[in-house]
Image (cartoon, rainbow, N blue to C red):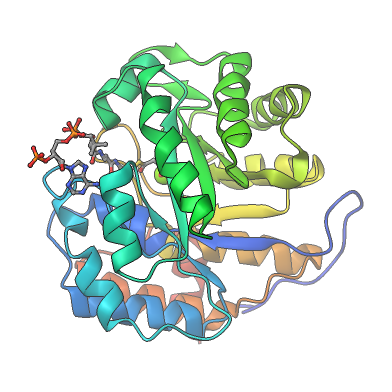
Length: 311
Ligand code: HMG
Ligand code: MG
């Protein structure tokens, strides 16, 4: 079994992609059993050792809403922060910001919904009132010198409302960027998008005033489309891709959400295309095998399955 793909570049792709690793946050927020904080810290350390430089570490959301990440402060206190590695965290509101700043965080991500129903289910807000929660949070974070990313969830399909109009996604995204969020990650929370759809959503955001170099993509792989959608996004000029080592992931407030695009699957494709990214595939696979043992089930990543059994 080959342990690296043959490299054959393809035209129209960026030379470098930044992998925004969400395994420790998106992956572990959805686990039924709470993962011990020491395991989370070791997971993050292993990911840094594997060459990943952006590791979304945890969430400062209400601990009752996501008990799986209630240990956020404890985790950050025990983490060996590696030089050159960025550890953003999710923050929904000013209370979350207070907690994050106290924990020494310098990069946060707010997370908006493109749909009314998910805004209510995930944030206990209406579509419109979610902005009133983010506005003072983002403003203060920027004033304190923090970097701010924003997600738009349900940017493709919504389990309650069906297909989502790209213009609606662009309108939400634009408001977040106007607020000062430096990066906008388009979330296919339930994984229903396909490549043409990915292009349409990106194009709508760009037409709505969001610069392409501020757009990132966040594909869940529920329908097996995440890698194809990612390639479509790269061809549109996106250079930041969210992924989760081992394909962990999901959202506790969207039952149809399953794992994210697996980082190993992404890395295999990027290596094959000759696009640089800085991560070492063998170390990621080893980490996923280690994590699968901790979680008691195998990784859904195709690349992990192929390589973990290889000599
Ligand atoms: P709420 O109940 O409306 O909160 O929840 P509130 O503002 O009314 O406050 C109620 C109480 O909670 C107050 O305490 C607050 O201080 C406290 P009291 O005064 O009554 O004693 N509180 C907090 N405590 C600790 N940390 C906080 C916090 N905020 C308020 N941050 C809230 C609103 C947004 C907090 C809640 O809905 C929440 O925590 N939601 C988070 C849901 C979540 O984490 N979902 C998963 C992440 S999103 C995702 O996975 C999608 C993504 O991956 C992209 C994609 O795939 O599309 C990013
Ligand atoms: Mg997600």
